[in-house]
Length: 167
Image 1 (cartoon, helix red, strand yellow):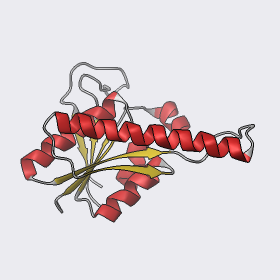
Image 2: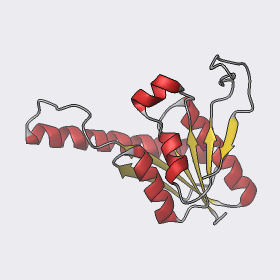
Image 3: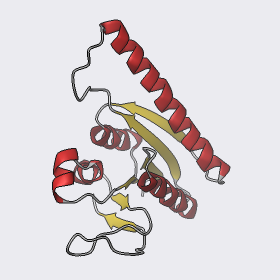
């Protein structure tokens, strides 16, 4: 590893688990830890806002996102994690996580996964899958403890909580 780990956070239990795993790896290897939150900036559907209302809406979203990532960083530091930086990136999460990983020259990117399958993944997309496909370095995909799928897609009991995937 290059000595830098990037953990993507979004407020989900899976992302919290990913941040925890990234912190453990950082502590064990002496690697620099970065956390990032990607705020989507492209509207999914047209909004009936004026240009000024749209700008104000975006400004509020950016302030809330900055507060979120700063609070996540403070939580990690309160738990004894040494954090190099907390990043707010704007744009499509999968693209921005990959871009920031490259910019930081990260040796590992850690993301959470909800474990969507089939139709749900096709409809909503999978940030973790896109990061795995496009990252320049290894990617660790973490699922929240106790969640997993059997071979037929049914929910199964306690699992290890992590599933490494090469990038």
